[in-house]
Image (cartoon, rainbow, N blue to C red; front, top):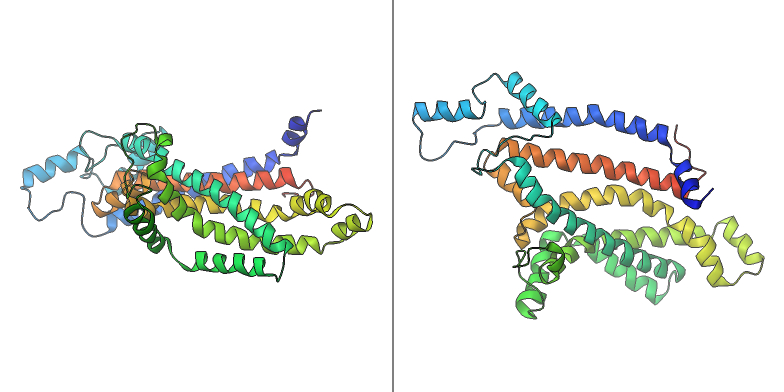
Length: 323
């Protein structure tokens, strides 16, 4: 049996199926609560300083189904979502919510994924470095930077990075995606948003990995490995790191979801056309369908990332059992 087959056989498929089935009522509750809260909130998508005449208001309401009873609007919307149709945008004429999601989701996913890759790489390295040098100058330095990274919110970090590296040094763009059609080519524009999102995660991951490394170093199996005379580098590589990294796997799934939702603020600061910008614009303009579409996408990502973390944990630690 190959390594891939062995890993595949360790996936708790019954648990995965139960989680997916449990996600269905969870998503229904999220959609229902968000739908009725928005519809019952004061104001509407076509309210403005200039009052429309009654005939125009009636025509617009009929076009978007707003003249129907609320329960029927919800049922119609839910049936559309089940068919993959999030409906037309009420404020962006000529575009459906599906079109807007197709435009914005790749930008948000690119920023979130790059931020987590940077955070996992740098945070793990710093955490292990500090854990192996507990109570030394290096440990105190890393933890000091980690405390600062956790304490400073991203809406402060973002403008500071713009002032220092965009307006000051001129190394990166202030905002926007630039002229390149492929977002992967926009290193000049994506660096500061990615760093802003990654810095708090680097701080949290480094603290997590430091604590996990210290705890693992004191565990019986590591003491046994040392007693056998194994070189310290081998002990760390074979016995410390595989065990110390398990708490990080549990953290990474929810963290990815937090990074995705955290990009709401970052996209506004850097003027990026991602899902976060669409969500904020939709909420301000009472664009019901756009807000619902963005919310459903974010909720789905949160469920999937958490499930993926559980599966990875089971693959890395065969002793884990899911009942």
